[in-house]
Length: 430
Image 1 (cartoon, rainbow, N blue to C red):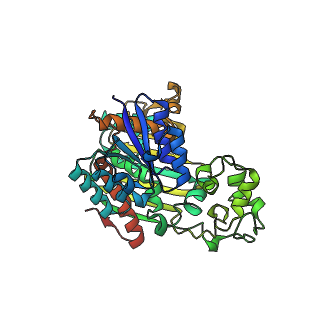
Image 2 (image 1 turned 30 degrees about the horizontal axis):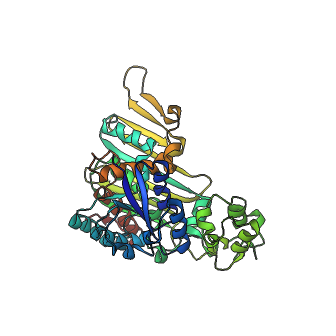
Image 3 (image 1 turned 90 degrees about the vertical axis):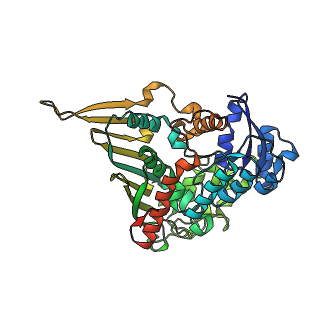
């Protein structure tokens, strides 16, 4: 693989993490530019990668006006910015590693796909879980026909109480009219993609979904709850969702979101953080029951595929621990496991006398460090970047390859699920 050059567009946490591949493998990747409206973030990236002023841009449009000087873009802008930024950058000649969801509605989805064909650009979507060893190994077993033809897939994502609060109650994805993505698409886009991936391109036929905002709304606020955890809440010391407990007692867990208004300070003090949470304009100090959020806190999806098989996905926010689980039932056996455990079980039908089924335990933890060297999401993050670079250079796509057209079915399921939930009817996938 030849050394490539990349430009960061949208210098948030995700894009900068993907770009860190260049720091670990400077012989394979070089970061040669950044585009972001936030001057502090541009400065940070320029210092990290020794960029000059003419390699720093205020936005994708300004970058697109300059003659192409890199091999691809790492696009980590917010969800509703993915399509407009990518269109101008494709026209400027760039291939793109694009954060998910790659669009916020069906019309946008087809618009960017048609543009990729028009300009003959390669776009890979950041479905990082496809690159986690846990899901790769399950996919290999499916491709080897170890459980026969798939009858049903059951997936679930339990979004922990602190993740739910920081992202979908207090944070950037709390209102659809602000972020333009539903919680299902922002959070469980990965899971819907995994279902579509396991189905080997067989398209969904119809989708039904139920869900809603059950817990995090004013009517459910406990007696004594205030509007700001550190100012007027009488139950803060006993509340599971206290901003003090989430962001002061755990100052680094969600620092890339919570302390964004302190980015101008290299090492903000505890006093400065507490003062920040008391600021009425800081959403992370607000009561979770009075944060003005409107996205769901739970949603269930039922999918009917063209071959007659079915699948379900359950997304539940506010759980005690984070968890992704999968159960695939085939005509000859089944695979079941929990992502965070990094192990799964394969059961096969065994009709022999005295038997019922056989069991094989696949424990990826015993194979050494399967994840650490390749970053978060179970080791998927930087494996994705490495595969993207191979793909851009014309290499054979891996079994995990997330070319944008391979991501269509998962996105369609999500868009149809949200429409089904809102309109309370089954949606036919066109």
